[in-house]
Image (cartoon, rainbow, N blue to C red):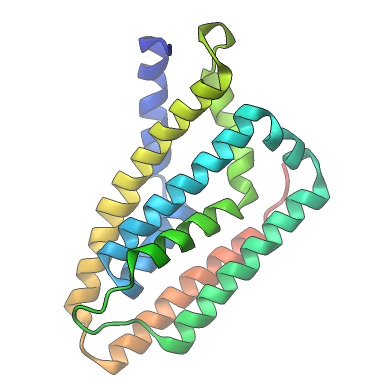
Length: 207
């Protein structure tokens, strides 16, 4: 369905985007520092599935309407800000769980990643700006092409954020665990990451 020449152009561009530090990478880093590499991997999968929702909406044409509606855009944005601040508060309050064998359940980390990405309207703008460049209406169903491109982006994100960044954060956490002081320190670092992401989202302008 998708021409090989199109894939040859899209895959390197998508990988370059995955390797560029951004909100998804920082979120998975924070999850890894707070709760271990398994949580970071699960969070990256949640981010990928949240991205697939945005891609599906873009393929259906719904995302364009959302991006053009200031009220809807802001509702999504402030919901994301509130959720990130709630995660930051939890990290500041409880610190990091640094006891051996006490990594966060992957399901909870998956839900967090999914919700954080789903409530980030910047992803909507990115999908609308990036993916359509590679879609060929004459090559088959447009929605299916959107989904295929979204799956490629999501797989790259899991590889980079879940396997590379998440493993690094998880190992750093294990090297530092077993100290209440370290737990508080890691909690503050993670809380700062989440709070910074919330501020970044709050200051986001629709462009």
